[in-house]
Image 1 (cartoon, one colour):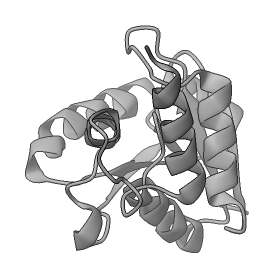
Image 2: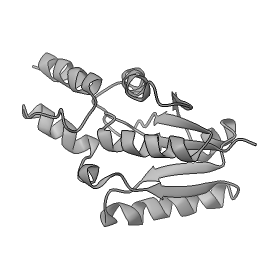
Image 3: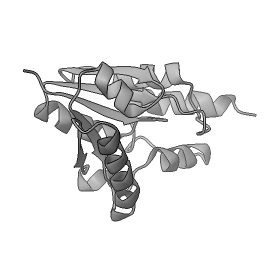
Image 4: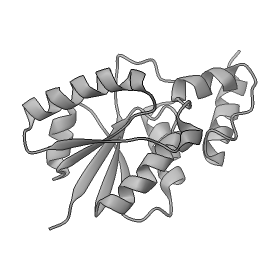
Length: 162
């Protein structure tokens, strides 16, 4: 029986830290679904289709990894994918409390699904999509933090802003 995992997130945009977690999860599980969340409460820089496309390009070549968007409860999406594991990234101790609460809620909603936490490599622990967007907005170089396709998308998107 295949072990299927879901790695959810807004991925606005996907970073090298996200990719590190995806690569490592792909080695641990038979199939990994990267679920790009549709979250109306978050003001995203990129549309959901743009985030899916950027993420698909970024994971190209990583075996057994698929990308699609989802909306609604994560555990419902996990069930639809017949997954048994939710993968979450932890960059710092400050992430833990929130992630721990989410994991407990997801366990309460779907007891057959486990949450595992993966820490990115040290070089990526400070990277977040929010910081990448801020640096890019202020004209900084984000090439060390995101894949090339994301860097180009950020440059194009931010150049269009008045």
